[in-house]
Length: 303
Image (cartoon, rainbow, N blue to C red):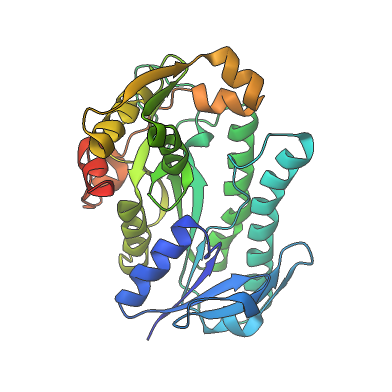
């Protein structure tokens, strides 16, 4: 039985991926600071501490693959200087710990699959961003570049490396969709800013299928955009969600850009940014999306 070691395994994506891996007969080991608090009896929990740069070497040596999802939630808190440093270091220092452990200890890891984000790219023009485009020079662009660079040395250790630049993962369990849905409980479909900004999104099931595909497809290597084939304008996403959840029983409301800036500070820039990202490269490997359109995705999420 092959083993997959997951960092960030108790988060939104990690939980869904763990479920899929167990269904497919894999052994799952989750690295966590508090292994004694693990709740899934089918999973082994092992200790690591990024701040102290310590990791359970037995867990590392048992695994065949590493899925690296660890990182502080970008949208959870206001971007103070301390929070921005935490967002960056939670990604880079965890990557550095993995690289150092793989360099130092004998292991049988064949592939490392790391999360990244479409925050790598800047503001969209008419053309969708592709993987070879340069990073944005803003905070998220430079942070995402540093994140990818911190895990890159894995490729020099005779391991394959896959990096998924992930868009907004849509799930009823958490993340952006849960926040988008909150005003709908009171009958309001709330459009942020003009609503014209592009959102590059992906259904959570397609996202974890991508990670699974990276494990089973030995040919998969390099950087891929993990986004659905059809990005949508923010307004279309909100109205499609509202119709799937409420039929016609909702009122469309707008939150102007200046109000978002007052409420969220610098983080509002990312919410209002238009990001149109191409999925062509991963589709060209033969991967087929179960939910290629926002209509299909919302219909499944709110059925």
